[in-house]
Length: 200
Ligand code: GRF
Image (tube, rainbow, N blue to C red; front, side):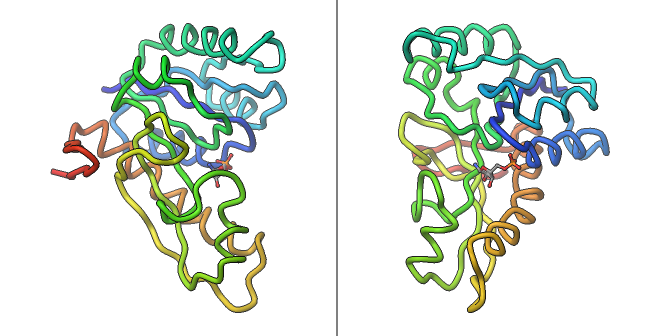
């Protein structure tokens, strides 16, 4: 059994999808911790309901980014986790953390990377006029949504879509894509070869 920890800043529906996939036996892992930077994240309530220990590292309470990152690194080390899952964690991780857990952190992004990295990916896709979008699960490196891609899922962009309807269609795919990537990691089936991730 792998030990996984999840980082989430908000609603936590992707966190819930991982919790459910573990509970149903799809992912051979235990979720040992939720870490949030936001004391009012609904993800914390989900952790409480699932009996998962939660730690808040509230960015607002630190004097600068270095102090915050140091506290976050300590909280992450304390998890003794094999894998960290960024499920709607809305901050860039500094190089100290990225190097400490290299190839052991994955993120989900609501666009087909490398298109539309960063915030408001669904809005950017709509405004650009693309006909398909989707989601990407990738390893975390020092860039913003730039790490090696594990898997992607597509959805159509429909003529009447607004940001909310497109986000909802993408989110439904996220909820299967993220557990799938976590499962592959936990089964030791991901082989990273430079920028490319092979599934064996
Ligand atoms: C998702 O769209 C995810 O791709 C993005 O932030 C959103 C988080 O949603 N990184 P939730 O908190 O998992 O419900």
